[in-house]
Length: 398
Image 1 (tube, rainbow, N blue to C red):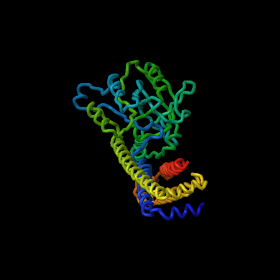
Image 2: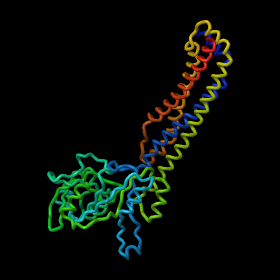
Image 3: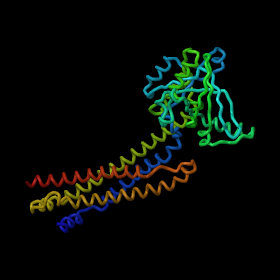
Image 4: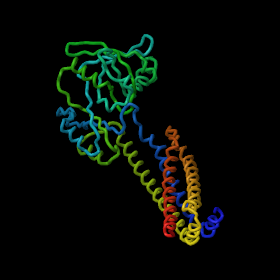
């Protein structure tokens, strides 16, 4: 059986068609794998996300103008402003910054015999925007300790400004989290001292964040009781780089804190370009799939009479189609291996540029898995078509 089928294959097989399929599929698959891997490798450059803040967020404020400041415009957001934001198709949810409505004095020990005293402030955002260990976050009157997340800029100002001129020791982030911290809260005729603890640092939030449940309790206990409207909002969006978001901000005279919009637009365009490249690669792979199917159909068509004779002699459709399937599987496997090799070589070529940004790159296994899935789907389609064609010959003879 093996010799008969092999002779049939060797007589009518078109090597040029199979080579054309292999080259086209190799090009398409290599493009897909490189695009997927490149996207994964460079995305951390554009995604400087805080580990404890949910991704895809923007912090917005009202633009401060000279005329507005002279007229007493305090830049607050009204309920209508927030409702309008929530109705935008790109908005997932809106969180309000809650400000402290009482006096705060902070004392931080920074070394033997050294302590810093300063007036302080707190802000809070809803807990759903915080991604931090629950054991390190939250507040309870049974154990009144205040966890805080502070801006990394504050630590830099201390190390390179205050400490450098006052002869005080510089401290690292790890050391700062272990330093004794104490807050004196006062207002509404009341005063209370509470221990604090730094649990994280932020590049994006230029403020001091505390748990919302603590802020609500403290404002109620020490505060004036006056109604507060937020002056800053945190907005979780579907795609931060969407140009409609930027247009909305400009139309409403809102400002986005930091460089989030710029990095988000770069990330958005990276996603779009990568998607286009991947789509081109998939189209090339699909075209190569049809090239191979055409080759197989022509091969089967040329051997129709001989295959019918084999089926009449008692060979099953599976026995007749087995060697065609082995040919396809072997060819697709070779293309997959070569595409992975070319992807790895291409990755080596651009990784020097990635390392210059301090990024080590991502694992290649996701790209390899994508290649396996694509080639698995193409191979499954080839096998199904071969079996369907051979079965049609068998049913015709019956």
